[in-house]
Amino acid sequence: MPDYKAFRVELADKIAHVQINRPEKINAMNADFWKEIVEIFREIEDNDEVRVVVLSGAGKHFSSGIDLMMLASVGAQLGPDAGRNARALRRKILELQASFNAVDNCSKPVIAAIQGYCLGGAIDLISACDMRYSTGDAQFSIKEIDIGMAADVGTLQRLPRIIGDGMMRELAYTGRTIDGEEAQRLGLVNRTFESQDALLDGVFGIAHQIAAKSPIAVRGTKEMIRYMRDHRVDDGLEYIATWNAAMLQSADLRVAMTAHMSKQKPEFAD
Image (cartoon, rainbow, N blue to C red; front, side, top):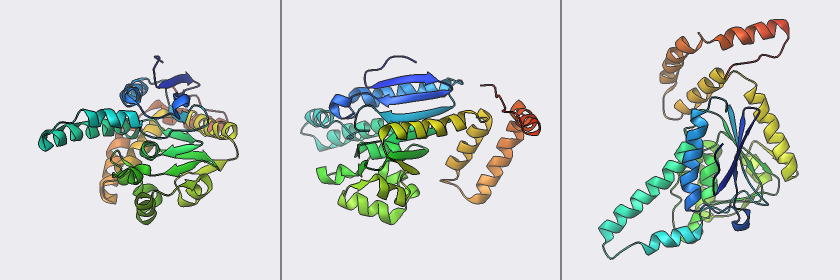
């Protein structure tokens, strides 16, 4: 994988490990971050060797959210005309939204491994992932309310489908911090671990399980789950019928059934 300024990306055993790599800045999301995450997920999408993505943060913290210096630089570019300011701000917000849409739209499962701070924009990011796991002492907060703004990069749109509308409202209106244990009770994270090492071991164990499955089957499963966020049940049933009319012709079905009957581990092509 190419080199990046805000990330370290490694590919091994069909798993892409995408690590936010600004530990000296608490992995704050600077301009390089927002640009590079789109490039990274484009590379992942185009690379059939990648079957699963693990998203983590280097150092003691996952991420403290958007870099305040970047916010200040955006503000410094505004002029006296309210209409033109609004046009520029809307363009910038849509640009930032596209960065996390790239994560949400990825056809491969994306698993977040979270330790330490997961604040503000980091909540937007993990909301775009398929699954989330954390240490028990991780700290989650929708911090935007405390700097006088509404979260605008995906938290308020995606999080209600993960933890429910009422709890999302409480966290968004108050900005209060919850730890990993409460996050698990709310359904924000699937499971908590005692340490960062145990967290990464556990998450990569899950990633290896998924990577061993048929990539065609995993892709179809994710596509159907994502489709059902915005459609009726009958629409979803129609879509899966059309999808599987093509995908059931894949050699993966024969490979899986043969391996099951012979009690062997299947090996699927990329």
